[in-house]
Length: 217
Image (cartoon, rainbow, N blue to C red; front, side, top):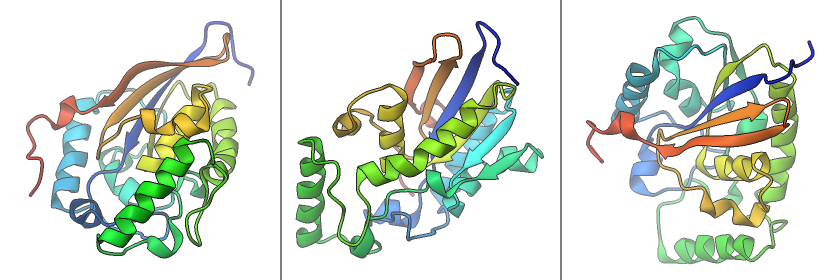
């Protein structure tokens, strides 16, 4: 199917809800397949209550269950749903699942600074680089854009992976990825204009739907 002039796709992009790893400040990455905790489940429910009316045609998630659980309300409605490993979080390699400590905190600080300085091919220890994450995301983006008949989609993924993806969608340098703030169950609303072949930002890091929830439990 060929896109028609002035055809626009609405993309609702969310980060998954809170897990116990998030609450404790433990890095998850693609190698940790954690469930949402109680607050994360309430965040997912609050998002669904606020946006259940959206005319979503398809759900896209990573292959990790914290993203599935974050869009459970939509899945339970019977909406079409696809999982893609290309949307998984970055692999933090040997550092995943470790309790916060001074040595690892310094490691992450130095690694992310290295990326911001433009060295985006540098991998985490036994893990991935931002460039590698982007390369596995690109085929998923191409697939999504090849389906103009899906005029509104919901994508659930992960913090660092979202930052990588947003730089790509907005043609920003990858080392600028930290400009895209996020928190658990935040929403980025994007629109893709098929005629102009460009994305525009409608809202970013929106959490109005979480206003009545506690910050922690």
